[in-house]
Amino acid sequence: MAKFFIDGGARLSGEVNVSGAKNSALPIIAASLLTKKQVVLENIPDVHDVRTMIQLAEYLGARVEFKRNVLRIHTPRLRRVAAPYDIVTRMRASYYMLGTLIARNKKAVVAMPGGCAIGPRPVDLHIRGLAALGTRIEIKDGYIHAHAQSIAGNKIDLQGPKGTSVGATINVMLAACGASGTAVISPAAVEPEVVDVANFLNALGVEISGQGSHEIKVRGCSGLDQGVRYRIIPDRIEAGTFAVAAAITGGDLLLKGAAPEHMTGVIEKLIEIGVRVKLNGRGISVNGHGKKNAVNICVAPYPGFPTDMQAQFMALLATVPGTSTIRESIFENRFMQAIELMRMGADITIEGDTAVIDGVRELSGAQVMASDLRASSALVLAGLAASGTTIVRRVYHLDRGYERFAFKLRRLGARIRRGR
Ligand code: EPZ
Image (cartoon, rainbow, N blue to C red; front, top):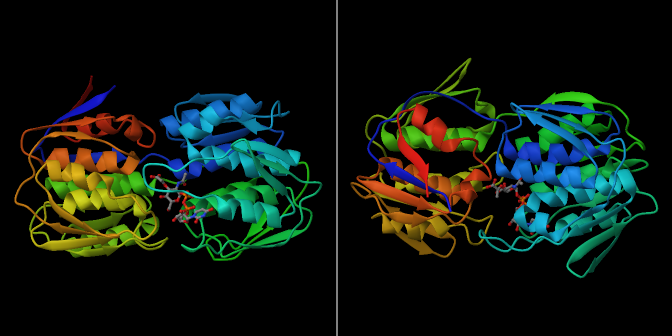
């Protein structure tokens, strides 16, 4: 199993190209199966989750070509309507095929996704939303079986115990593309990736409005047969991760192509910590020289501080003098990185949904184990700042969502290599 070997202490400097957003690319690839014509997607990150989604699309009947971040996908005819267990367990986002298959075919069978390392991950809102569109849903033998005579344009309530859901908003939007009449999704998630999917669907000829607000209207149409060329938004989480790399190493980076308007929660916290952030026409420059301050972070849905950035900030705050806190209220078990950071000398206490981080003068290199995607990047960031050598095991988690992470870091001066 691949590992990263990191010799810490190098200050990163230079320019890094921000890749396309994984969490937009996955549903937009799934949505490309809605039309019989060819779709060309630009800025698709070459990461394992994207490769898995391509495999699923091909399994269902799409013809796909993926070269230099451009994906051509053409599905004149669906060959199957079932997403098998072995693909869905590899990647939860496979469930986006549920919405697509319902819209295109009125029938779908998708393995029930289980929990995962960051806690239980229910799909009740997806099911409730699809049922409200008139789909009959049955859960049998670990599979969600969905079947609709016709898809109704209804009012879809996506209020859950933790608010609305990114995935359920997108899945219902996809299914509603095949509705007769207008579906009104409320409350809808407002994350930039939801807006990106809606914009893509509009380009495909569906009429969607309200994306970016808490009420999205989808006017369905049957038999989409329009092709489109579409460019995916930049990955705000990858950009944020490199911003933390600059901050934790006292370095100076230009995040080329980053979209600052999608990163206000993260930028505000960096500035509060004492990191200098400047926006220019080419992207975001981040300078981590100088004194840093402890801060309190509360994770929140967009435009708040993203749950997908708290692990990376925990690594940074572990090196900032004073007491910081991070409250994670979206996922129940997303502090897995804390115990590994503690093996590197971090002083962290977990109290319920809150991590209390007392900054230490220096982290020290150790062997650590990655548990999920963002926890993995946090351990790499800690390794960049630590004295000595850090070995991060199970980096396949990282490969799921970061494009050529070690390569990009090396070009900025990091001493990191991949090995066994
Ligand atoms: C998306 O997951 C992202 N994944 C996650 O990114 C991200 O952490 C998350 O949104 C929050 O921003 C993709 O886009 C592929 P949710 P998703 O449904 O859609 C509860 C990463 O590292 N909930 O908005 O699964 C749920 O348990 C990842 O790239 C229900 O109760 O997140 C959570 O507490 C991991 N019932 C909250 O809602 C449901 O049916 C928000 O989850 C669905 C969700």
